[in-house]
Length: 291
Image (cartoon, rainbow, N blue to C red):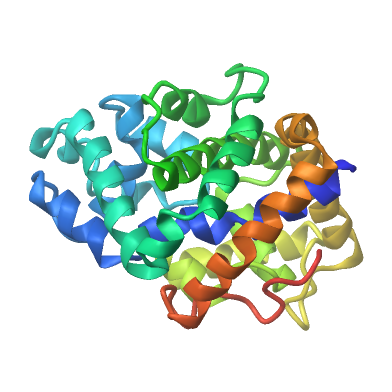
């Protein structure tokens, strides 16, 4: 197994982590502990294990969001609810959402127990916290005991570990947060452009300026808006480096373990898509294709 194969496996599990940002259970639980509806729920819910960070730290660790959007809700969120209560609320939300969407039979199944055990092997073989601030914060959270929450917790650790490495790769390539978002949407395999711009808080004018900058750098084609050959090569370098930086835990699980894990999780992922958990405008035209 190579790093790219492991990367594909990790990305195939992504929706089983990110459902927590879209299900109504999350809003219900986080509002119940004092947070305000809207974007505060995402930023506070994901960054709470860091403690009470200022907006600048959340901006640095989340990378491709407009800092003005983050500043509109952080640090106010920490005046409304404690980080501990927010983290606990997130796990209650995931518990309820998994049960509702996958069903009690799946949650209590031998397959879920096996998947939780396999993904835990990977998560527990993450080499360390150096240079991985958001992973380090989530790694300090106590492991849950219910098998479906163990599955989600391990998946979260792997997701944030990969994300921290991805930011390092983007910075190495000279792509700031807006650059990274624009070039990612241009690949077609991630977010749809309009969804990405609005969800990340960038105005149409800011996006236009970002596009113009990337055209000046000859990373985007002025006529089509697509990545140029140089732009495609740079994104490939970023993705290859991201896969390499995230490879160690998957290598520890081994090729057969990774294959079995993705086999077990595939029907759960399909179920989420069939139930339309995610907004219809979320995905680009090539979402799900190999890069």
